[in-house]
Length: 344
Image 1 (cartoon, rainbow, N blue to C red):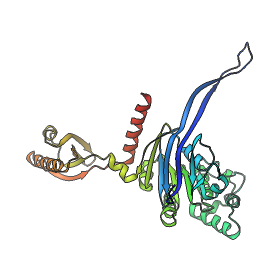
Image 2 (cartoon, rainbow, N blue to C red; image 1 turned 180 degrees about the vertical axis):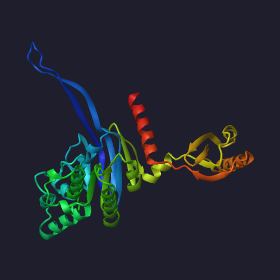
Image 3 (cartoon, rainbow, N blue to C red; image 1 turned 45 degrees about the horizontal axis):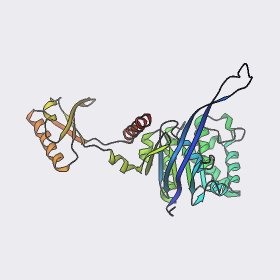
Image 4 (cartoon, one colour; image 1 turned 60 degrees about the vertical axis):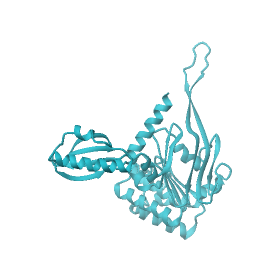
């Protein structure tokens, strides 16, 4: 492992076997287990997270994201391979690793419900060797930061789902961890709290050299927040690149010409360098959508030809823009290809 990595997974393999419990046989009075199938939560997965980096782990439900988080935090042991945190093997140095890691698992059962939010933070802080005035000050600061100042002495059982989620994030941050693992952290949060959490994550990584692993279904959050994206499906890591590089791989030369009236599409499809031409009708009027070849010279010539054809057709050009690829489209495309390959 290089010094730049705070977290690294090396050839991680994890299989869960699902079994179906059959009714008691009336003759033998025995119950037998029918082995249903093996589910791959991790199939030789390897990736690393550098200091100062936010890593987004994306995937459909059941793809293995939460299992990855649990293996890094020591809650689940891999069948093969190893997980490292700051150079420490999670399986062998679990107690030391737990002091370096803060975890927010999906759901709201991290906290102890009969206790108050303040009591929860004091309890979990002491478990991670945070003591005295530092612990109490940090607990109060976190509750103020997350918007639970007025609820710090209310039993957790009386809090809303969103407030419990806020508390779970505070518990993860109480020991000022080097590694923060967030499994669907924005679940149940209002817009203001979600924004505050994003800002805190950026501060932790950029200014203090921590690293953060985020699993989320919100592609807009992932694209905005994450420096590096890993996409997992059926336990396999099907993509792992810097966010911008991943978007560039799947970007296409698509240009949108906003016009004052709808042009006839056929002449544009015949222009050399034009792969396809379509007409779209939006809220602000018609648009000619032109797909071009990637080669610069041919693409440039095609763009000039399209504008000349619009002028020839007496169509006024209101605006022109290149359509940018987004993470949601890339995710859907990659997972669809993975599902197809898995079914064959």
